[in-house]
Image (cartoon, rainbow, N blue to C red; front, side):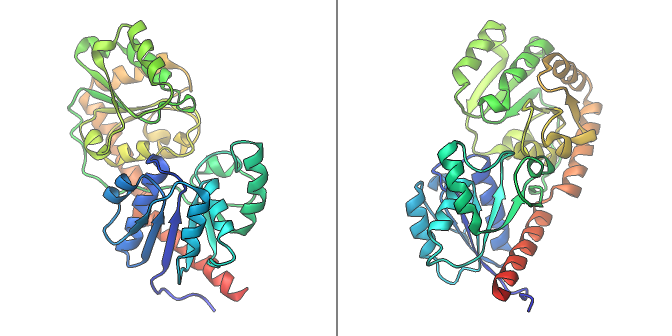
Length: 346
């Protein structure tokens, strides 16, 4: 018998005390599910940021340890489906299995197999057996993980069109090696836009911050580059941006890129990873690592407001058509009901 369209009880699990792309995604999806009438609980994430980002109808229970997450999950009664994010959350759901029998759905946020080291990968081979369905956030991720997956690209809320008349280029990302922020810094220096009154706003934290500050000094662009750290209100940041620069060569999805698209902000992105799916032919792509090409594209956009508006307008339509939060959550709910139906029949 097919599960009816009654409201569901859904628990999202992310075993961290941080707030980055995955936690932001959990907040957006959980809030939308709650707005659609479902009963939603989130376990994990930075408690202050999660509470500020979540709909008031969503309960958040803080935890940053696998064992406590498993205990909390086991204590959730009348749960219809458990949605886990990252390998530690899968482990918590597996540990909770004797008491928590709801089917498990796992979102694969990274373009690699489970586990960051040998021990984690070995354990993941066991814990992942309890997962009823893997969801890949992009074709790029689906192609690089083992086993079958359902591709459901992330979605974001529609936003008003940004004015694009500012002189701010924004890099909104972690400052880690895989994101290649040094390529963005070199592109900025090569563009010469700082000498024309433009500024580069680098939003994010990470292990490369000190090295990037040194690079900025070496390239002589300190006066036009601002490191602002973690930004809570990314919508305000993007609404005041003229261009988003996204140099990551193998981005699994790029939530900040699609958020910029929602604001109609033109995106200059490395032509690799999921940027080929999100930005695609409607944005400005450069070969990964080619800071000179990125610099030329920045100059072209800075020189012409009409071009910025044309590129940004195309990207905004692309986001609304392909990467809306409403469509993403509708497809998630379909997966939830399928795995619930399968579990009941089984």
